[in-house]
Amino acid sequence: MTIGITGASGFLGGEMMRQAIDAGERVVAFSRNPDRKLPGAAEVRGFDLVGVPDFEGCDAVVHLAAESVVGLWTEKKMWAILESRVQGTRAVVNGMLKAQQRPKVLVCASGVGFYGDTGESCVDEGASLGRGFLSDVAEAWEAEATRAESVGIRVVRLRIAMVLGRGGGALAAMLPIFRLGLGGKLGTGRQWMSWVHLHDVAALALAAVRDEGFNGAVNACAPEPVRNAEFTMALGRAVNRPAIFWVPAFALRLALRGFSAELLENRRVLPAKALDCGFTFAYPTLAKALDASN
Image (cartoon, rainbow, N blue to C red; front, side):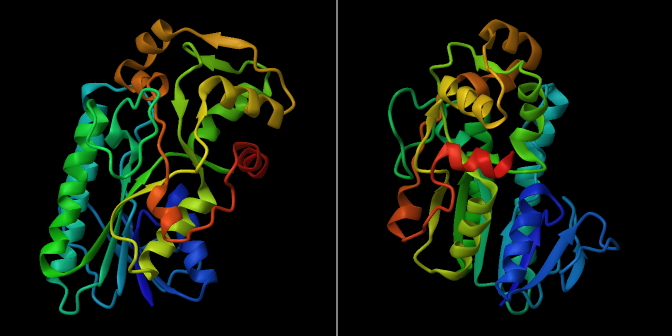
């Protein structure tokens, strides 16, 4: 099988590409710089927000390219988050529709921000759209992906939680602080956090490419969400440092504006569809995931 991957040079895309190649699949990587060399890729093709990517010869497409949500949410940043997802996914679907032999499946990244603040409730793929900026972004993002269904392409909307792994993602910012012994809970520390190990996201995306049982929304998160206080204590233990400091909610709101909601609101999300389809998480517990990521 030939799999086209956008964002193949990124944190998640690189892991996805490695797993696909190790499994014997042929990978066509899509990058803003088509002249770059990506080890293992059969070829590298161009991808941007305005052109129509060439998916000729691809049996499946995994669309991961998007602006990071991490950072200070200025108006410019928020626009980049929205535009990269909506315009990028529109370009992907247009490219798939244009191909003479269309890919049979699109696995498109989305986010658990779709559900907004879940409170104390556990939610799965059957839950309705929440409120907030990332909920609105996810709704528009997924709407672009589902356009491919009109011509019979199977579409999987992979709602990804906070990704943990070595060399990037959320831990790239957290680990230096915790290794200095300066880590601690955020706000009350009682807010629920959904998370997933890098290996498992990529493996789930690959499973969704191969298994026709995957369709529609699929939550890419570990089966055990934790409270923020539990997460910070576990991360402290993983680096053998105390996690006794506390960042008050008002300070986060002042420093990060809208992004603070992603750290202070509840994300108690369960991977019901993945489990129903028989997917096995290599890192189902936080301790195991952090040990593999440190």
